[in-house]
Structures are given as structure tokens and as C-alpha cells.
Image (cartoon, rainbow, N blue to C red):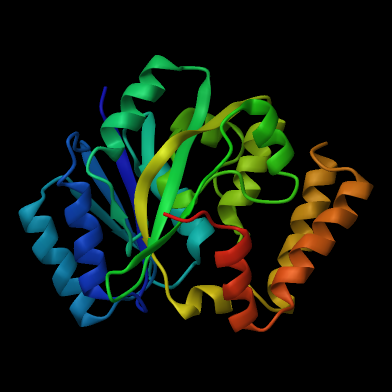
Amino acid sequence: MGFSVLMSVYRNEKEEYLQTAIESVFSQTLVPDELVLIQDGPLTEALNSTIERLKQKYPQIITFQFTENVKLGRALAKGVELCSNELIARMDTDDIAVKDRFELQYHYMKAHREIAACGGWIREFNDTGNYSKIKKMPQTEADIRKYIRYRNPLNHMTVMFRKSVILSVGNYRHFPLLEDYELWCRVLADGNKITNLPQVLVNMRTSDKMYDRRGGKNYLKQYQKLWKEQRELGLLSWPETVMAFLLIASMTLQPSAIRKLMYHKVLRDKR
């Protein structure tokens, strides 16, 4: 049994980033049987040309195109359905996988069949190629169940999960900005286990736009929907909801420059 890689691309992404991301997939010490690439709506000519060149170079690439942009949750749900393997690794179209990422996760998931999803740490880098902070994640079941009350317990672009478990809890849903966080809540509430390997698995590309996306009233509203669902799932109490609100509001309602500073000074580790 092999494994699949799942990616989703839309028209605003850069073709050179997509190429670098996919090249990192097929430069692994253990390569996937297939890479399912969801084209979320019409793409630019440059992206289409890049995808066609990559498909010729790597016949393992399977594409599916939506006629309109359906957003990430729906795109990934379709991708999960199309993947032919039980083990599926997520990968973003602008990040770079560490050379042995898939080998580490594949063998871990084969040895620990009780684990539904396994992530890892990320190292951030910018367009100039400068590597900065590392985002570490909790490992134990107890720590993850505490962590999920206030923050996403998995770095989405590092995750390898079991298709059967994801489908059993309803697959990805349309939950803008928090698609994966909402999914992990359902996975845990259903009695499954998730974990993180204590090492960097993906180099994540960052820019000021990332900090813009993680702020504003709409972002806070999505968290309010998530907290409601977490309470219904038994993952969050009302007092914990208040704590979560104070934590997230202190980040999302700040100017983007302040939010960037808080991420680097408070929420990240040094190299």
C-alpha cells in the first residue's frame, strides 16, 4: 500500500511556487503513488502551462478541475474522494517539503495504526530565502486535546491522514479560513487520535499577506462559529470559550503589523 498527496490550486497562486512545491514532492526519499491536484476554478494560462509540463514530467499527477471557484474546503473534499490510497498527505502549493517528510510519516502511520492524522513542525521562510521561526506543535493526546480548545493542533500543510477516518466524520466542509481546524475537531470528537512528529516536515512560505488574512472581523466571526461547534462536540466549555475569545480577539483585531510581531515574538520558536 502506497500513499497519495493532495493539493489544491487556484488562479491567484504563482506558477513558480507551484512548480517548486511539486518538485519537492517528487524529490522525496519516498515518493507518492499519485498526486491529486484539484484546480479550484479557471486558472491563468501560466498556471495551466506549468501544470501540463509537470504532468508530462510526473505521470503520477492526477488533475480535477472545477468550472468555478468552490473554495478550499469543497476542493479538498473532492480531492479526498479522488485519492485511491488510504494514506493521504496534504501539501500546499507554495511550500517546500523537507526531503524525508513522507518517509518519516508513512512509516510512522504504518507502525501506529491507532493514529488518524499525523503532522509536524514548520519552518517559515520568505521570498528572499531567509528562514526564520519554527512553529512547534503538541505531541501527546492530552496536550492536543488541551491545545485544540484555543488553537489548531496540526499544521495543515504537514498532515498525513487516513482517508477512511476523514470520510467517516464527514470529510472536509466549507468552513472558510478554518477548514482543517474544524475537521480536526470532528476527528477528535469521534474518538480518534492525532499527533505531531517533533521535527520540521515542511518549509512554509510566508508574506505579509498571511498576517492580513489572519485578522479582521470576518476571521473572528469564523472562530465564533467554530467555538459553537466545539461546544456542541463536547470539546469546549463556556468558560473556555471566553478564554478562547480573549486570546483570538487579541490577535485578530490588531493591525497587521502588530499581529505579525505577536506571531514572531509569542507564537513561534527561534531557529
